[in-house]
Image 1 (cartoon, rainbow, N blue to C red):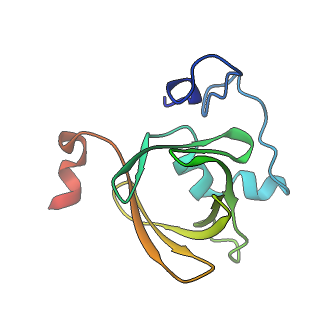
Image 2 (cartoon, one colour; image 1 turned 180 degrees about the horizontal axis):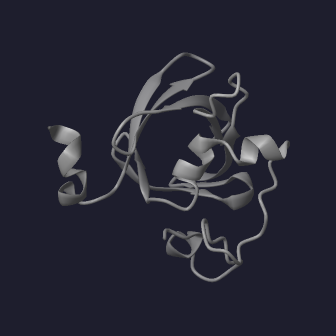
Length: 129
């Protein structure tokens, strides 16, 4: 599993998906259990338009090359597939795609970015059929 220890030396253990991690701190437990949260939490590392690493950790902690941020589920009528990320002063709407990818749209100006998990092509074999 991907952890914040790969992003920072020392400091608090911000493990994303291990059982001994602190409980999620999102507002509304129903959002913490959303399918999109389960997909992103502790998986990775992720890339933002090719820039790595990004990590989606428990309690809404987001680690990026540009600094720390927040992330979590967005109310979406019970589908559980919409997320938000907020870092470097900008909020982004995130929609998960197939094969460990996501599409992001910045709220301020509508700029769109693609993201994906950094996994070997062998693991993505079924994605390119």
